[in-house]
Length: 464
Image: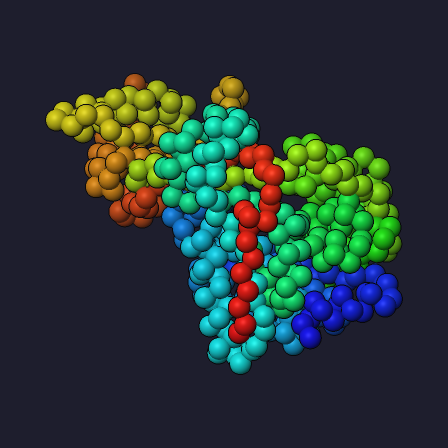
């Protein structure tokens, strides 16, 4: 019998609290072994891991590459797979390989197959692709069933075709179907973080509002604690609420830290939006159990009037080259905006003499306006700043040409009040230009109304 089958059978006879282990906030960057070991001593009923996000930007979705190294990802997969098989409990992984598209899912599955062969492990593996049919999306556009999110423009069929990878974010329903096949290990493409941890409680009949709220917190492991960290966390779920405890003894899940994390990545502090509905947090309470544990109760679930799937896609934007330098001259720093604009003009005249302007050149001055565009300059300038120049061009060669030219003319640009002609900026290393390769931008960040989730996220099963 499978690990999930045994759990289903046990709960059909008698009901008890469910112990859920959130092993890692993002698989592939290392799982602290002491906390994972401590978690396993608590006899968890499942292990869950989130592996991805769009927080890492459009490059990984567009390129099909993983954000962590393959070495790091395989090391973490081996840890959680061995733990799950040793204790004969389900392992559930979401947003495989960082962005959850077909290349990411296949890389993750390949590593799991390698580990199984190398370590002599045998189990039933279910995978859930998240890639969307472009014809399906274009038909939905034509029917008026696709809506932009945030500041995105309405989606066009041309943008759908230009995305190198196009995924939908699956929820609890897809994980449920995968688990109901009797799979010991479930690996999903792009997924809502909550689906990873709320699917088993949903199958077992725990209230969906409470289990989804729990899932939203534990998917980040011990980030909800003081001090925040990425160590394994244990959630103990019952029909009235759940208890949280970090498996790292130096971290405490306090009422204030857990309540604060309930707002994480939420546009509305009281609503957690999911494909099948929303979780209402207005009546939630956070109660201190002891110095390291908090109990949470009161979330409720409201089914959606219509099913929607959030879509994500990224398309090529050109090739990127960077210039890395710094300045400590107060005259340069106070005049940097005008200086950089003049240098951009000089560079344009030089590199576009016999070639049309086919690039974009940006500057971010860390210490002044590198993180955000401030409405006004500071009262006093910092004593030094870091200057990041970025060029996006049709080819890597063109981007490098623009950045190298920018380096030379920024270094020696004359301006009023300059004291030294030897150089306006300093370089942390040479060459100070870095060509990073293909650049991508998000071009699909939209909601699609759907009638059927099963056909969008088919479950595939194999025996290892």
